[in-house]
Image (cartoon, rainbow, N blue to C red; front, side):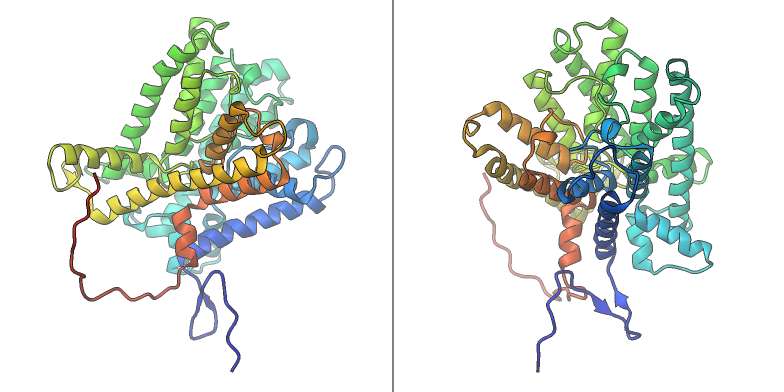
Length: 465
């Protein structure tokens, strides 16, 4: 009897013969399909490019960067893309930011039908923190909040730019940057990102605000709305940790960037511009790839600080990448509990389940191991060539590039365009893993229905220090 073909993503079938996919499989599969569609569009749709069409690797890179809301680009958006090309790019950003499953769930609901529970969970995120109404209610809220915030941001940017560009000329850049900011993508229709606007405090403030709101997560926004309206007596522990950690990171990074760059990239600016740009630098590395200064010219301490912020990222349930603010907060609380000799981890009179702590540790360790593995591969693909094998400057830039891709940030030390085809494919893989999460990929590849052990194994201690 012939053996059935082996699948990379094991799936089950319902009695009716339909595929029965898990939430991680739906999540990974939907982003893979959207990336494939975006790549195909860049390759075959007419009128998207100025000059020759890009090759497959470059088209795949741009589509992945857009869908995974990263912002790294091997092609200049302003110089190589027509309006229609930029529109296609923005559509991929919006679909990737909202989540294709979110829109699909909304479409099913509009037809008066109900999607499967796994489908809705994959679209809505952590179900334990869902507001009243369940996944579909959160999906509707995601769309409403997204469109409202993006519209407000577009209006603010249009008002800031209309005198410089004209009322009509400022409209498309305002819409593009509002969507790109809220989705934490970091793509820009300006050739230098926002360097030419580094003295425009209004632009920096609006973009940074959109990035912060997009990176805080819809679960936090919904929780705060429920508290303000009196539907909840207190905000959740998730909201407290997400907001608190975000505030600590911005408040801590701002003076550090001022100190490290005072006589560097910020030297020619006024005091107000220095503070505005330091604030912008404290916000964007955690999630969005906009830059108002040249990151290839920042000091070494600023490089390390930026790497740390990119590794942390934004909050769960948002468009941001990284290991997430709550993960780092839980690790810090676990360390504090250990130093105090406490068995459980608690915050704001609430204890954190052990399973959540284990997941936080797995995410943090996985993020570090992935970074090391892909940096090693990039060093092999990019540096082992005559004349550059011992270039330590390129090594730092490659580490920066890898973390930017894994954290779906989009900042670069002018290295993206210099990557070889193999290096670009490695960065594509990093962006995809950073967007869907390495744990989601592993869970998607695992077989469903695995039985839990009905017994406990004997314990044996291990020395760890």
